[in-house]
Image (cartoon, rainbow, N blue to C red; front, side, top):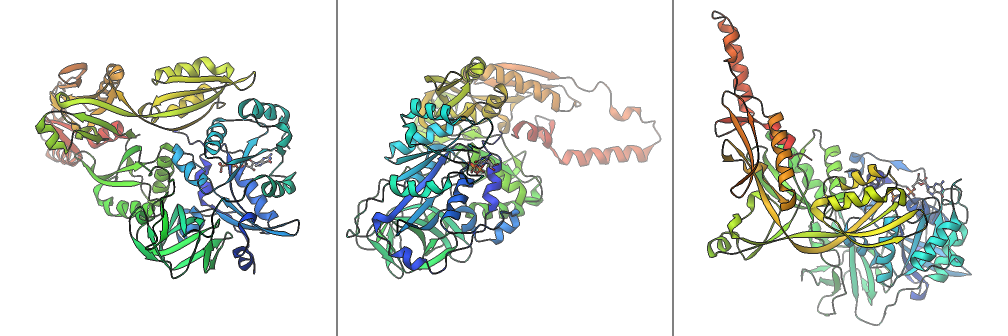
Length: 630
Ligand SMILES: Nc1nc2c(ncn2[C@@H]2O[C@H](COP(=O)(O)OP(=O)(O)OP(=O)(O)O)[C@@H](O)[C@H]2O)c(=O)[nH]1
């Protein structure tokens, strides 16, 4: 899959260097709540969020050194925090008054609403940044509605007005018709050239609200991001909602019930500046000797030990939605791959890791990700930071399966189980119901491509919910899709159908009953567990034919005839046959040449080591790889 913004990944590695404030932290600490602004920038990918953020930092007195692209090893050497948490506390004097502006980073990759929710949670306002050339895109829409549903005040800004094709008037009209945004209030800037930037911070101060908090109430904070530091363990980014907390106090996590002593508190300016206390409305980094990233639960409420408080309306816990198997290219690389995965997951606690084994691919892991982009970013980093290419299997989703039959229930540990690995499915006759994950997608496309886009959506079992004309040339549609239908190549297909003009965004939409089946592959009548998959019944036939044809192409001819069959339950949906060799391969070698014969046999024996034998048929490992790989 193409990334929504492949270069996002690079951005994660693009550690901009800023000077830090000198002597300011003392002042920042004492700024009254009404002069604090917690805000974020929401934008579609490439609309200029990072460029605007840089300009704001400059305006707030931080000098940017030349951006530096660091390779992954260098990133490793850096404090993890620099790479991950990009929240920054800015100091600004407006009309002779000092302000503290906390710019909260929204994730570059928008995978599932959860990710965005968590960065919106500490904010009271959001800059809605729209490219004056490309106009409103799918992420603009979904982020806007997410921000509004959280009661965030919106400051609309059009960027890139310097571009020849920019059409700020048209985009303002679109903002008006889509979101009811008054064109009068829309700022127009070029973040790149610095045009109109001087108005941005004053508008943030005047138009976005200060945090609504109660400084007198007992300390309560929202944990909204975390990062791992080799020396200090997991560090948490917190937003103090009420009261205050000081270094040395004991705090408790509502999520885990564990208590810790506050070891360090700091503001990110963006360099870490230690302070001894964080008070209401502030955003800062908390270090309390959490050994593992799992202890810093995103969305958690933190309070003083022994002073119970109500849990903050958190967001749903992050849940892996897309799964992929990761295997070393050969088993001798198992340990080094394990080390690479461990290293990467330290800084990305949202990835779930379970050991997995596959008789064809050997020992490996099944990794769970929040979404497709998350998976793409992680796998790309894994490939970069690990010298050989690991085998990464095609992504799959998690099904909820209701089962009956006392024996099956006992064997699977309950009446409702979650399964992402087809090999672990109960027998068909014990399955009462399959439920599959759904997503709510927003698609914006030029009207010229409407037909093919709708065709693609129908093919992927999409159900259209709404269709709205943004203007005379573009349509916005919302669709509900089974997640399984988009995990493979939906985004790539959408882009190529529309010459790159369509944009797409999606959020989690719960589970729905589905008519899924387990598609088995049989070789000479024997099931090959590794090659089975869970597919929708309506697609089983087509999928079965494709798979069987592909297997026929890649399994080498052998001494025996091979029947390749695809079946659902007892029903065979497709079949191909590979004919046996008619002659003995060695027959061509004339009798006396023993050395050649021996050499051939040795080669065969070598080859066989890489084979997996099923029903007397030897299947090369490459066959599994080419079927299972994404
Ligand atoms: N002409 C022009 N280009 C701009 C302007 N602002 C940003 N850009 C360019 O647009 C591209 C994307 O800008 P970024 O700031 O990286 O956009 P972003 O929204 O942070 O992108 P992601 O991090 O991928 O979401 C870059 O090549 C910028 O140089 C602008 O005002 N005018």
